[in-house]
Length: 598
Image (cartoon, rainbow, N blue to C red; front, side, top):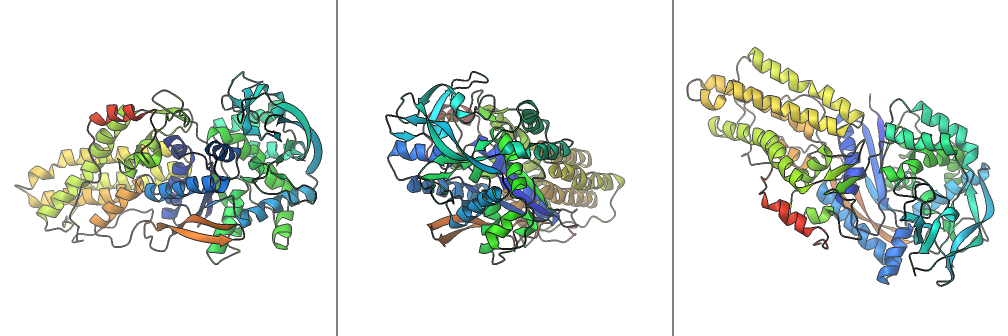
């Protein structure tokens, strides 16, 4: 049965280039799962966008002395370039600075207000007498009052992952001018999460049996130990989404409140751009739809507890306010498969120290699939992992090239040479031939189950294990030798291997789409496995913004065993992967700490 699958991926701040930790944390796992479900024939909608209103963006603009919009668009355009090159196939990658997002976010706000979940209150907020303004949360750093980390932001501690009450921060300091800020009263709207706590806790307990322990532990554990407390959802800002209430000029919706709404607004924007303005409801008001949220561990609480609370609180009022339609409840998250962090050579990735492997810079020297492979085999699904250049070199050569790339290239090159460029006729298959094909075809169940449950390292590991079994089969049948004395035996073994390779191509395609497409063409297929990503310029009342979209029309790939036939013409084979020289290890380590060459 066809399912509707929403792939919602964390929105990157428009203040820095995307590094490998960001890619493996959310963008790549989301793309892998989306590609798997597309092959399965499910209706997939994969969305995200640039978080253009976060205070990291304004901090960057302040540091550069440039307009915020100019800075956010520069990084946004870099993200679009990366996703097209890396093959991250968003149905829509947009931005929060759109007329559509403003309207959707303000409608969510008004729905929560109508349902009695918002109230106003004056609370102390950090104020800089030097800059003569209230400071957004990320403009203030200090010591976490929970774990003692000295580099905590006033709203969140990156070390212990706790959501903080800004006024409790110890030894606060302004990131703008270095001064010590003072607390002053200012009025804000608060989301009364305490009213929604029982419903959110019940929601999390219902998902306890299939969500990752790290996600349940951080979200439900925090609720059970601390409870859900009211949180301010407005800020004293002049860049962002205005509070849609008269008399609240000069205040905007808090970025953590409005950015998560982007998953909904992006779906609505995609539907409009696709000429089917109601199509977003297939994922957002359909109780059978499954929505997956791909994020890093620092965003767990906001996506597993806060965002469900916002959705619950809107009740049936969102559609009434947004579109004047009879109300329907919005779909709650099905799974939040949050990843842990990827470090670099044993140290935490740091953009400010240029201690990072930036994805676009990487692609100036290497192909995209080796990056996708290494980030998947080393994906931090349940614990922090480490990018190590020596490990990357070894896995590329010993696994990607030796196990999979050489298997495909030597079999197809051999067939192309000895059977005049077509798949050989095998006559009757032996028991050994049938057993290896049955083993590989079983992978559509075993590997598929791992993709289905977002165990992506396990999915890749099982597919590569099956590739090893095909290599073992070829060692036993030795067609390279039997071609001299028994060409029919060689034909049988090569045909069996080609069909196995055709199967492995599909099993590996979600992780290695670029080389899967090349192999697909070499095997004689005319239509590509996947559709194409492309750029589109969109105009609205706020100006223009560029988006990445996905055209699925040309896709022909299916999650099913190969039926390739004898006599199928082959294109001239070529190596799928490049063997790396050991010199890259020291060369790349020497680049660390230096500006990326972009």
